Length: 610
Image 1 (cartoon, rainbow, N blue to C red):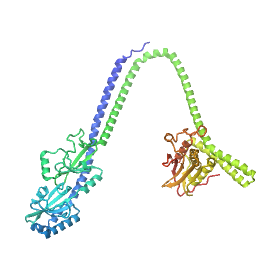
Image 2 (cartoon, rainbow, N blue to C red):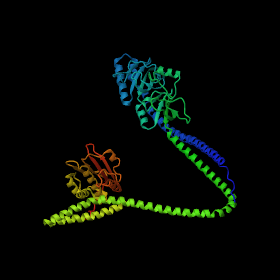
Image 3 (spheres, rainbow, N blue to C red):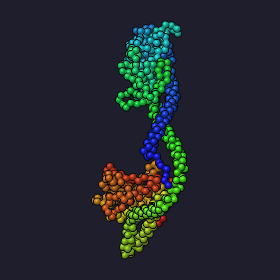
Image 4 (tube, rainbow, N blue to C red):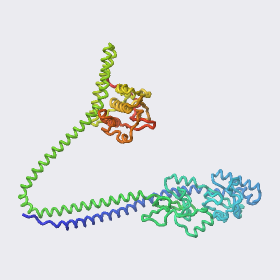
């Protein structure tokens, strides 16, 4: 029986391609919409946070300015100033007024205080005795003078016309009596640099702009005396007439084109353009504004993440819906073809049986191949461990041979007491060989080392004892700096001695071509750690060796003299203690290996069993 005809492959493929394209476009559009919504939410949050911080900065500035509001009026009550205004040519009156203003300037911690007559001429000043004194200058063009001479408190921020230094000017009228005519103006100059420094230390990018939009306080010097927007010709004329900012070009800091998300772009040309959010708040009595610039990058990243999440979520939902729809279609197709398949099953049973048998044979081959691969992996591990055991056992075996030869020679000489000592050492080394084998088996299982307090001096002595034959063979000197008896580390005694033997042996081997080889060992405590450094006077480590220093089977020794496992095993042992093993070249020559382990302060180590 024949099966129902399938749809044309080309038509089905085109339909799937069009459907997939439409779904992808829908996911992208949904993700973009989610990004825009999330960006709006995150930017609104940034602006709310900026508004709260701006409120704090505005209150701080108003409190700073309010400290000096009453000072000019108090100075205007001083009779010495009235006497000078009454007799402008009197030297005694000028001297008294200068002294008073200087005392007031020092006591109030302001930049300057000075007295101006009705025509704008300065009669006395706190800086009368310094270069750049205000005395003799006319400040009738300054807005603060014009406001004070009319009877109001004059307020003004600008660059000093005489000193060229910026400051905040406050001016009050000097009256003849409480309601008499105005005789002159008392002005103080306040340096806002401390407030500007405090803004810079806050971590926020805070600007202070005047009523014309000119920035006069900023965390960066190159931003000062720039504008928040291009100035009109009339505004430039007003600023030029008052000489408020001297000859500053007053170029815009902010581009006049707002970006799509409401942020602005800095118009600084000497660096990469930056897009920032700008929030401002009015402060003070002169139309000043505190401006806070914040970086919207984090909000954009968060919104982008939300957009991607939304797009993937929609893709998942659509894929799930498509899968369910496909399942329903497949069920209908299967139900329709069920009757035809029942007849076809009988015809194909024999063929399926042969295929099942072929699959069983393939599965058996697969199992056999897998078992062979597992066995090969085991043999590779056993080969690596046997090579490591031979490397670690050769050194104690050499010491055993030395002690046994010594025992025979001493026995021939009848020195039985020394023979007994040699046999005791042989017994200790035999026990040590057993411990090394046990430790290597533990290392092969990747199990944690059992740590206990180990005296560093004793571990060094044991390692030097094993290496004594090699040292005599090379006629080398091993210089050990004095080690405090109480200096101990958290480690395993035998494993620590293994590492010391490996490093000392490598140091001796590196100097075997030297006429008078010398090895240095130093142990010292550094805070909660102990550093054991072994330094040789050899040629040092070549750069290509440093790159593979702790790799297994990498060695520069001739064939038969090393398997390249010593440093790899030493590294694993030290890291098992929670420490570090470092290797480097010394500037004065030679290589240095350092073992850094946790110190065992205030504890005593148990003696190593014989």
